[in-house]
Amino acid sequence: MARAAAIKLDGRLQLPGQTGELCSSMDYEAFTNDSLVMMYSAVRGALAADDEYTSDGKEPRFRVRQTPAWQQHAADLEAEMLRRGMVFDMIRW
Image 1 (tube, rainbow, N blue to C red):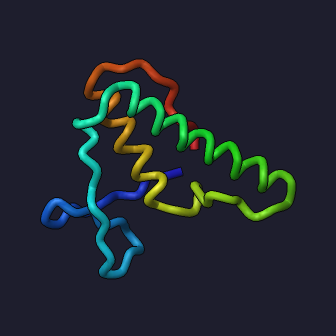
Image 2 (cartoon, rainbow, N blue to C red; image 1 turned 90 degrees about the vertical axis):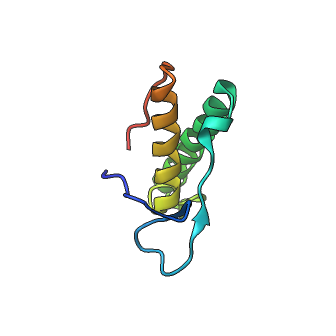
């Protein structure tokens, strides 16, 4: 699945499909390695939960695959962890 590209305006992040609503970008450099791993694990867990719900014929609970902000958050975490030389298993979308 292709990752959504974000547009930064005045330090704020706008994801494709958003109309006029901007959200603040996170300062990923400020987080510890353990914090980055924890947040990335949360994305992976939400994705796994969605997949389980979908396989049971239910609506996904977190809508990770349908929400560009989730995918952008994961991409930003990956970029910061790679920048730091951290070893991790990338999420397979």
